[in-house]
Length: 289
Image 1 (cartoon, rainbow, N blue to C red):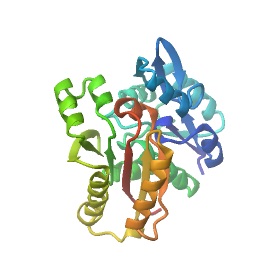
Image 2: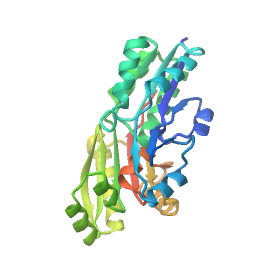
Image 3: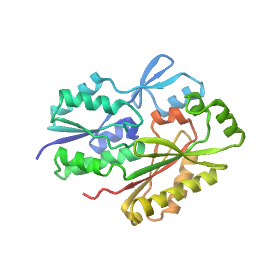
């Protein structure tokens, strides 16, 4: 049986310490902050990142360098026959296409890059599913095929606390941001497949939370064909405000009784575009192995 390694990136929310316990590998995402280079969970913690945002630092994201990927892949392949690499969605970053190019040119038959268009806790679930399949004796190609067949079986809904960072990144106009702030709107965004899109506008946090929970219920009933709630993974995510996130997790658990709801911070690559105080909920169809 082939020995297959699972690698993802830090957009999955999996820390280096967690990865070691799970038996997978995590590529740290690079950031450029005030002309200095940082790497998520290496020399940039969640706390440090949000402090930089509060100081209105210049923050930009990047993708792992070809050299850093190849160095890790070469190291892992010394003890494994193949690698399944699950980076963040190609719709949100160019890192997936870059990794595919390197794999096709230098690691054909050894490194399989999976673009199953996931991010945050849904990307984490893909890595866990891939690890379970590898442990069960699936071939690398079988794992890739399974992950790609089910890539659209997931949704993320995110409620923003502020429009400032969307305006700063040029994703909305200053006038739209000013009007939204004046009206105290809480935009709800959606990631389904490869795109981050507007989904709804709420006037209060309570209304926004209700919109997200109802959207998850609708996905289970309509997109997933009325699955039993035990056939889906439901997770929460957040930016910075852990206390609000704990209360949100409790609301989600109450809405979906009996489900073990996982929660992680949103990846910093997402957080730098939406700012602190965001809350998210996700649904993913369970992959039965």
